[in-house]
Amino acid sequence: MTSQDAERRPWPGLDVSGLRILVTGFGVSGYAVADQTMQRGARVLAVDGADTPEIRERAQILEVLGVEVRLGVEHTLALPEDREIDLVITSPGWRPAQPLLAAAADAGIPVWSEIELARRMQSADGPAWLAVTGTNGKTTAVTMLESILQHAGLRAVACGNVGLPVIEAALDPEGFDVLAIELSSFQLHWTRHLDCEAAVVLNVSADHLDWHGGAAEYARAKGRVFDGVRTACVYNTADAITRELVEEADVVEGARAVGLTLGPPGLSEIGVVDGMLVDRAFLTERRTSAAELGSLEDLAHLGPQGAGPHVVLDALAAAALARAHGVRAVAVRDGLRAYRMGSHRAQLLATHESIAYVDDTKATNPAAAAASLRAAERIVWIAGGDAKGADLDELVEAVRDRLVGVVLLGSDERPFTAALARHAPEVPVRRIDPGDTGDVAGRSRLMEDAVRAARSLASAGDVVLLAPAAASIDQFRDYAERGDLFAAAVTRLPGAST
Image 1 (cartoon, rainbow, N blue to C red):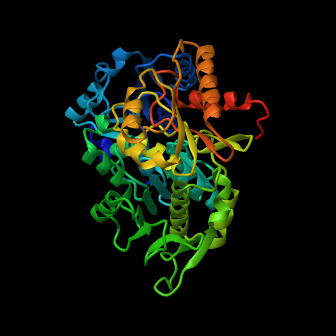
Image 2 (cartoon, one colour):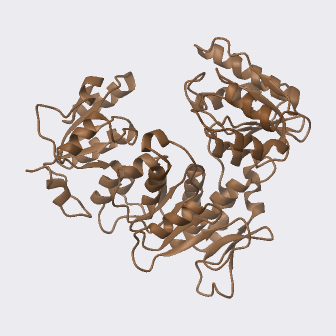
């Protein structure tokens, strides 16, 4: 058996029996890969640099069934010396220059993502794939799509970068009709064959540039979602990069480009007319007529002052992918009406004295924060954290007229205070003393101080918004803890009601 054996085996319905597979990274997707391939006769070794109780528990489950797991950094620095490897399936977080992956490439061993493996292993009559990527809004769009598909009576599930690993959904024994797949740029980098029925790139802005090696490489990774599309490549007409990615895509003959716009749609576009979501792409008479898919009122519950523009765009994207699959307009409307935001994404937590408190802790970069800040007219903004070197000037300049106050978290507030001083010097700023955040009590105190400071700056009708535009790692365990502590602090405000 040679290292090229995996590449030569026919697919769809790839038979992995006898393949010597190395799984790098033993998180949720790595566990799923090891489990699914081991069940089908592969000889699996999994490695991970971390050695936590959670990983050990996963390892013990699969080791009983014949998967070998090696934990510790020393196992991630080179290919194993005691066995041949035919195929590497890598965690999306592992960079191409990581020593083990670089060694595999030098040795001519294929390196695939879990997504690539799932596409090859899925049978030819398996579920259709509808894919979502973009710098911001992926989770909202893909879970909206899941809701629409389910309201159309289809067995569908959101998977990939959210929910189930794709390989579990693709090989589910009961069989899904459609997969709504969220894909990160990391996952796409390691994927060569997607062959989706339809796919969308919501937007492209600077993010993960250190991982990809630059903006062009990052955008190129996003654009891979369009390769092999059979029906529709969906793009954002306001984002020139997304249009360029469609133009460069290698698609199946007959696939169409479909634009998304927050204004009236042109031919082969989906947009908004007089408060209605309108389709001029997926109907035979699109040159002379349009189909109503719902209204902005159907989305009003998704924001403190109605759905923000970014949420409307996500809804249009979900609608476009569903329509590409043949879903009727009424199911689009019903799915959007029933949809509710997940935790930490523009989530309206409570109201107190006519002030709304919104958790968008997932807004960890300036582009995501800008979208969130445009969803209301008067905002007290809770921001700050590890800005990762991002330029905050464009963000502050774009939203300064909406700011009635700013509360700053973070161990280093200077990137934010400098941008605010340049572009919004009249906006009052409260800096929260970092103090000791080494334990939950200290982090809880920090967030309670932030919420009280925000309340002191807000008036009736305002929105207190946690949209940090920065990572959480300088003061919190992760973005979810930051959001959870914010929610807890809000509930302790006197008289707060959900």
